[in-house]
Length: 327
Ligand SMILES: Nc1ncnc2c1ncn2[C@@H]1O[C@H](COP(=O)(O)OP(=O)(O)OP(=O)(O)O)[C@@H](O)[C@H]1O
Ligand SMILES: [Mg+2]
Image 1 (tube, protein in one colour):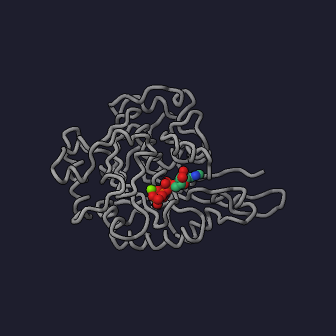
Image 2 (cartoon, helix red, strand yellow):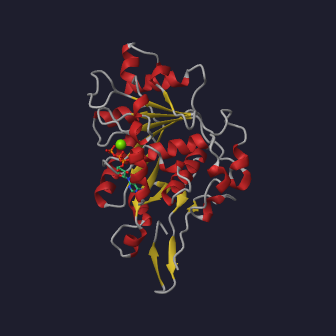
Image 3 (cartoon, rainbow, N blue to C red):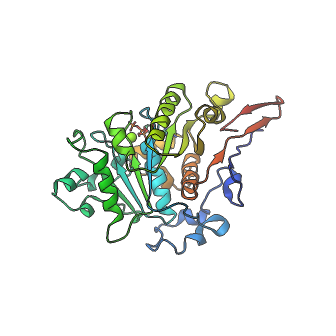
């Protein structure tokens, strides 16, 4: 039979080569209370293998989540990876840089609590901390929206304004966040350029279809031109039944085409749509779904600046090889 094998690029004695094994033990997932505020305590006691991920790189890690093509899962990734990072004990600020078409607040169920946006901060109508919306479930996760829905990008708002914003987040009294995630708008126009300007790493979300891949390839070039060298990809909406029937490109094919390090593989999961509509990110579901676990594993790799490898898996009955979930 087929087995789902997701190997880390640099094998370590961790959960990573156990394929979709939950990061957290079942007891931890049942825990109704968030981790305590102090981020370096108690986390290890609830994680498998009795360790928590080691934060690599300089903080704050400013990561843009981008794609080129629209509707491939950037906002879903920002919400789920962001909350996974918060559950792992890291402080996170997620910036919705999709001006006019923002929806990260909806996915997080925080839409009724956004009273101020960055535009008001820049106009001097409110303080930065008034525009930051703290998640009640995980107090170390905060949302920041650039503007009100259906508004246009204000004249003069660009990359420099976002760099100022990131600097202001670093200089806050309560301390700099560990992660600043920027949910990028689709396309490669002004909104995209603005969103990538303060980032020093990128997560490129793609689906295994040719239109998404072409756009992802173009975006990779633009990110590199902007000096962002640390680019990892998440392959979203993967369907193993279609890969088996050779109706969908495998993750291995995608990786060969884009030549990027693989941060995660997320299966197509109807629970994603359900959780989107409920404003309750998938990673908070109990019991966790496959897609939720895959997002958690991607968050873990992001923390450690690790990646996984797509592999070939033998299909014994037919005696051949095919590429499945990257394997
Ligand atoms: N793994 C998945 N399985 C099933 N549905 C998914 C999956 N990932 C995302 N979706 C659905 O795809 C749709 C688009 O997702 P999302 O809004 O995250 O994309 P986006 O890239 O942010 O879009 P935009 O470019 O418009 O900002 C949503 O309805 C979401 O629920
Ligand atoms: Mg979006």
